Image (cartoon, rainbow, N blue to C red; front, side):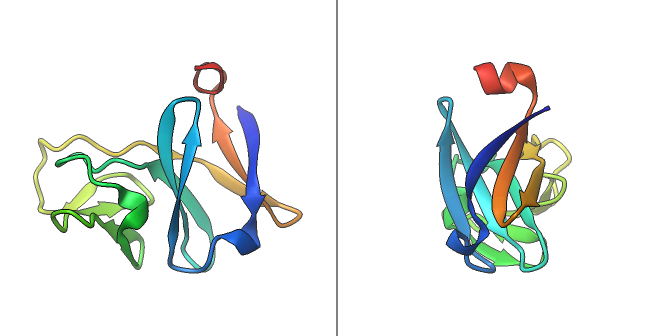
Length: 110
């Protein structure tokens, strides 16, 4: 696992998301208050920018059509549809007040 320095934790306010462009992909970082999470910044419904959505508990609501995505698993929680693909999640950790994003070697090189 490659850990990439992203930003200071103070740059990501509680209950908000921020967009991160990394190696040609758009990711969404969220501060849930007690921890930080990262997912692909694209709703599986119509590609809405999840970083711009409303965070409630452990879900984010897509700003385009109100689909809710679980920030922990990437699963769509509303509407319930087993055929909907998951949103990819990424590990995040904090060291000395700095957010680090975990990428597999192939992801980091892409």
